[in-house]
Image 1 (cartoon, one colour):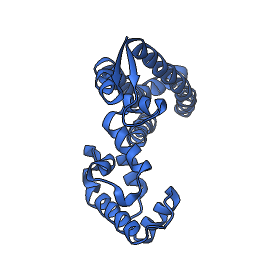
Image 2 (tube, helix red, strand yellow; image 1 turned 60 degrees about the vertical axis):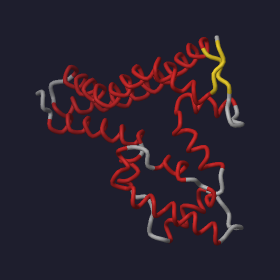
Image 3 (cartoon, helix red, strand yellow; image 1 turned 45 degrees about the vertical axis):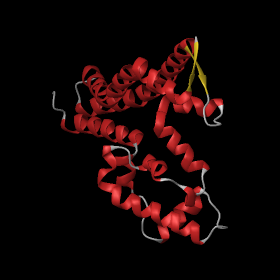
Length: 209
């Protein structure tokens, strides 16, 4: 075992476990819908019964998958910590260091956004909101939100800083995040939308009947 700063350990973590995690994500998004669909086809001849069986399989399968991924994550981290003694950098806690090992620079940026007063957000910090190709069409709106918050808290230094306060400021200025942007820009919601959308397509149009 050897010591390594958390942000450097992230690179090693990606080298070792990046591909397995990528494969697991592809399975969750594209393979599971076909598995649920196939279970329905194999268990019944009636179309309504097939759909019902597939939906039950989806419900149970999502629970099983969540449990499995949770334990896979614990296994990967256990194996990684057998190799590396992660050293928190920049005053981070051990728990925050784990987030950096998994999330790298993106995790650091999010921590900075949460820990800094909005008027002190740097351009690098706010990249946490727009460092994905999926945010491309929302960059202008994101920049307007950031500028709004910076200006507001510079003009009102004693104003409360909280998630609800920030949402209220954004909403009053007509820059709230709609559900489409949430789905497109959030990787978890985006993956769920694709997976459930594919499942719905298979159940409704039954392409392999």
